[in-house]
Image (tube, rainbow, N blue to C red):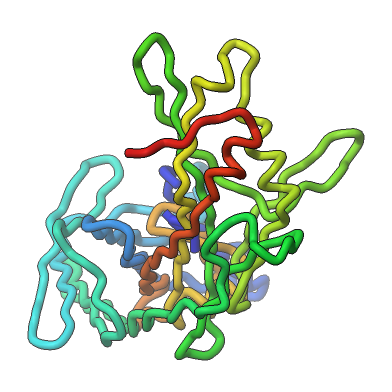
Length: 309
């Protein structure tokens, strides 16, 4: 629940067998709606598929998924309503543009299918967190700690957070600045003689720490012998991104241990569904940012230069 934001969409519906009737059990038509409102995008996407079993014994096709076309899908909260536009042929999806996920709002989605069936659901978008004053702002910490931390206060219970810390830098190649961004790990662990980075994972914890030795190694590892160290310009600002899942997505993650978006839903009816008159999931997430700053002395200690703009 990092962005959340995966290109191929697979929906799997496991249908049990009833040996007393047929090897396929009782057939039940179901529709799977997937709608994850993304707080780091202005484009929101919905997919709907129909699931069934083809009982032609000469051509058995289990759990075949058909994309549903010509549905009328509406998203609404407060007094506002937004209608999705249909896109695609082989893989049908519905989109709305310029939609910002609101903070702490009850949002409803309704889909009128071509056969007259209604599918609907509700979600409540997350509240923002408050980054605490005891979070580190300058790195390295001035008390010579071997780690630095970001701590926040959440105003909701049982919410899952997805943290990410990144650093920007540029390499001067013949007068042209080549820009790069890397994700910074929390730590490195040794495995079979190799140093393996350990990146943050989704959790309900309201804080996270990064080892200074991991940051040291990450800064050393960006250097290539093909370039002079003085051609490296390090941006002092480290960007910490926090994706906050709503209750629906948090529940899905805590039950299945999977993070999903509209293109990566793996669905089992015994796991999680919050769709009325159908199957699937409707949820939302928001993203907040917090900035920390590398000291110039720390950057200079690697032989690099400070990016000033």
